[in-house]
Amino acid sequence: MALFSDSDLAEFVDLKALGTAATYNNATINVVFTDNYVSITGGTVDIEGTYPVALCRTVDVSGVAHNSAITINGTGYVVIGVQPNHSAGTTKLILNKS
Image 1 (cartoon, rainbow, N blue to C red):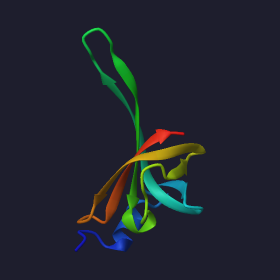
Image 2 (image 1 turned 30 degrees about the horizontal axis):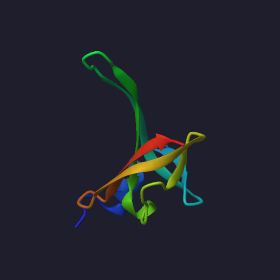
Image 3 (image 1 turned 120 degrees about the vertical axis):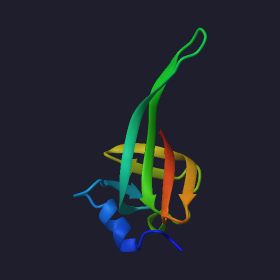
Image 4 (image 1 turned 180 degrees about the horizontal axis):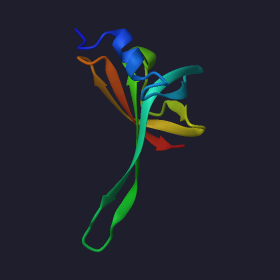
């Protein structure tokens, strides 16, 4: 059983709350999108970049798999990681710019 109802999750990803419109599977869905800066300090080489993530209602992305396409804020991404949270009814998509 999910911790949150579908209506709770719909409010969470609402565009007036934390949501951002995205296009997935030829449909518009709302997601919570972050693209945080990350930096890893190495011995002789430092690596830095961004870590784009879309938190979605699982019902909106059923069937999502690696290499699925999603567009957020006009930028195309490819799914490189799928992390479902069955108890919360959400799925985190780890993305890479396409």
